[in-house]
Image (cartoon, rainbow, N blue to C red; front, side, top):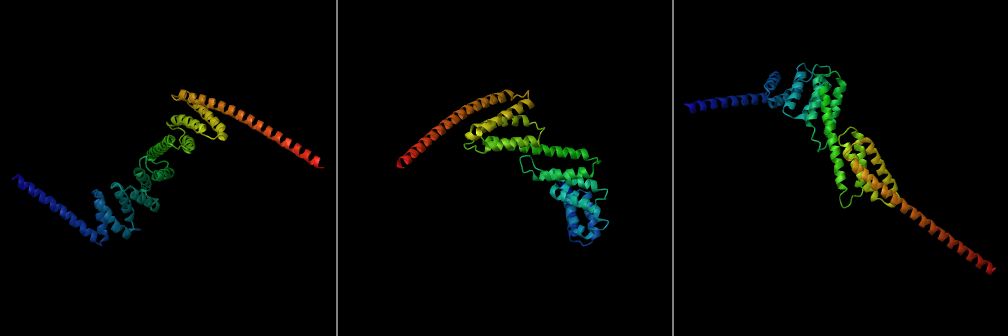
Length: 310
């Protein structure tokens, strides 16, 4: 008996599904635009968004410009959003706002444009160009609707995206730092220094600035030590400046002792440089004196020879 009931219920369910599919198939082929419009809205209300999208695709080109178009286009954008097609949804919400900017739904549409882009933005370790598009869209919404109930929510979205930018920039800085351990560090020292400084300018309140500030001193000294003689003095002085700035900004830092030791090493390197420079200058001056004396003797000998010939 139970099996018969189960079979009967399964059969009824199958007939309902087939009937529904048959109804939708007929709608897809229909040219009755009022029927299509009503069915699209009905599927939307039933949260069958994929079917709603198909029918809106059919009917929107026909009803565009009429009184029915505004709500249909709004539902069309939301249908894409509900099916997680965020890029498409963002575009349709923006088109809706541009077309119906005086509509009571305009504020929500512009917010949903920004929110869709925000949801589509990738993790910090991926390309952040789409995240910057999201920031621009959020900023546009905030500028356009500064009194909106969604204003604080928009601020939170921007803050979250900025943290992703910050994290990506920090990871890039660490990448440059790791490359200085390679066989041919070369310009990676210079790249590290520039990258660390740019990070601090872009994210002055970042929690990572203390760590990168220490690494700036460390890398700067390594760069100076490997520099040609003519550039060593300037780069050693840069290291001391970086160290002094770090100790002023982070007087209680756990890196403080290590920075002090690096500065002490830098000062020793600088003193050694000055000794070599003085020795070099003395040797150069002595060599120049000997050359000048030799030239003077040669001139005297030439003058004496000339006078003897006369």
